[in-house]
Length: 192
Image (cartoon, rainbow, N blue to C red; front, side, top):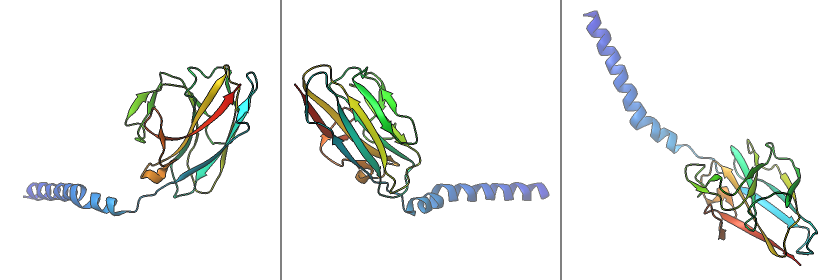
């Protein structure tokens, strides 16, 4: 009789646990307000025109002006290059993580999916990252570029905060799309 009572009590407890897990707790979790980190960035080119053999700098200030975030990323891509080599040099940064060099052909996340969707990178880039991403702290990234050929040298810049909970979690929010199907600011320098 005692065994039957114990088995019944355990069975009822497990049933209550599964009912709570499947129906009650997810609704309580989803009703909680989600944080919305909101990145911003300002980028400044030192020159709009240079002569072949000269260099220019790109200075970026970026941060999170929204709710607390897990990760703040600034990506600087070079669609005119196949390799970064000696063309691009990081002059300064104060992000909490060391910048990562992404090569053409590497798998990269896409469509703001946090790595769930990916594509093959068509051109090299640099990603600077801070974790965690508290609000109202500026981070700096300085890049020196020495183009190897004349023409227009183009740079794509964007910032993403994770968790990516809405369109406010990336900057810019609209405009030109890159090969990751994510919005970018486009900067260019004429090389004479």
